[in-house]
Amino acid sequence: MNALNLAENIIRLRHDKKITQEQLADFVGVTKASVSKWETKQSMPDILLLPQLAAFFDVTIDELLGYEPQLSKEQMEKIYMELAAAFAKEPFEEVIKRVEKLEKEYYSCYPFLFQLTLLYLNHFMLAGDTERQQEILEHGLRLCDHILAACKEISLCNETVVIRAMILLQLGKVPEVMESLEEITNPVSATKQSGGVLVQAYQLAGELEKADSFTQINMYNEVISLVGWSKEYITIHSDNLAVCEETIQRVEMVAKAYDLVHLHGNSIALFWYQVVIVYCSHGNKKKALEYLRQFVKAIEILLSGEAPFLHGDSYFTRLDTWIQELELSGNLPRDKKVIWDSAIQGLENPVFASLEDEKEFIEMKEELISKSRKI
Image (cartoon, rainbow, N blue to C red; front, side):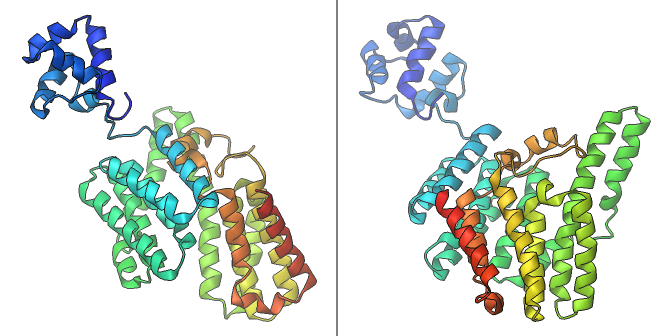
């Protein structure tokens, strides 16, 4: 049923039940003319009659009204991708108004609200100024708090805690980030061993396909996680070039072994970007430009094809079902143009000032700008 199409729904339900307007009127205790006015949208039933009408047609009041407070996964993904595309092409405030309207309409559909918090987090930087950006983040924070207060789904709540912490970090509320995450990310927690125990159970039960699939998913996640942690590691040790270069060398071997530029271009692009910052801070222009080329290449590959953002390959052959169950089914969380523009903006980082007069740096920047204009 479509939202709030009461008149059409009464007509359809009455026809399904094969009764006349007069028979319906007799049942609920009104005149035939009243039913006729309901069906022609000249008037609405008294609110006290809605439970009786719903009971008569054996539907809920929401179904009678045509109101759907919950959305399917496919509907949520479609709305998200449409809004992400709108952020790339339309005025920011116009799109935000649509997002906030949907938020109010589906305020009890917590998986959808979670996706809206992702929208806020992924697009707040497009707001006009710092004050407005902070307002958007604060709004996303309140939405996270609403989900955590009302939702009973543990996995969704855990994901919301992480997104909430990411918003807090953007707002500079560092102590609150530490307080919210230290317990659930404890590296010595026994829950970290649960995956291996589950795989052994699958094998003992003879469910080898489940064991294979679960193991692949975790291997994939751990490889991506390793690159992410390595990025943080060279950030922490940015003043120690020896530690950074050893880390870079090790990640390069992993990236080559798992073909990360094609398997998960975003993770390796973020790592190469941090490598460029390290070499710029140590005055090594040659190395900075070398890894900047790799950063640009990873971004180009990430955005060049029609394949989903997350996908398997000839080695990781059992990821498809898992990816389809993820938020957005593995698609990019932001429109391609927004990502291109973010990459261009990333080259404006003051730490790259030493590269601004380098021909290769200028050419790479112009290449990104040119491709952004074509989207």
